[in-house]
Image (cartoon, rainbow, N blue to C red; front, top):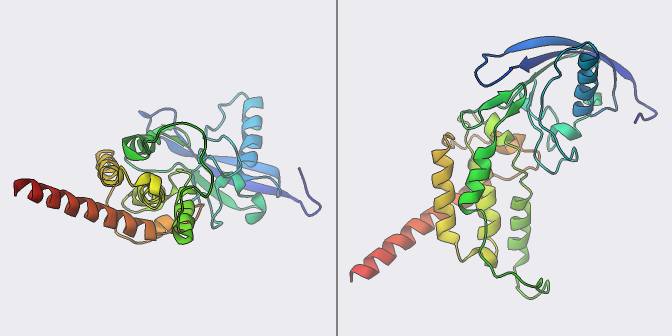
Length: 264
């Protein structure tokens, strides 16, 4: 849908094409003329793909789902930036008016050992799913929903938990980190449960299991450079990483105290 100030743009794309995980892959140049400045980035790729299909060529593969910046499915590097140049914006919510006419745009997948390439711009991010499965849940009895004021939670804790829970698991933090660390993602998932009463029961086991699984997946170590938070489309704070480290220390100390008490 075009607005009153929309204009057509002529773009040049350098897109990473890779047939399968065994293929070495390469950048392929594409011309993208007549793209509306009101188009989203994914809509621009849709137009390019329609033209490729009309010419009998293989379309560019990329992940997407809701296209509303919620699901975390889409994500790739645009001119070296995860999700592109706009802060707090997913690639599906990035519009072409943020680029210049006749600009050359380089598009490539998120690159990390724990995000193996599948094809073109699509990578396997199931490592995130395994981290969540290892401890990102609470064990509660099912039943009717409780009244909102039945469990009292301090507003600062509720606000911090909500902010942490906005993580959509897109992987931009990993792709932008020089060590391909998943600490921001893992810490956000640990934080939003650790801050709430419902998450206290498995508090110690949760952080240990999730950090252990994170390391097993091959993610790198965190060196607190902050590129993860800067590239996060939801603006997840680095304070979550500090909270994860505190939770891990608390768990370690508590286990040592429990072992010492058993030995008495």
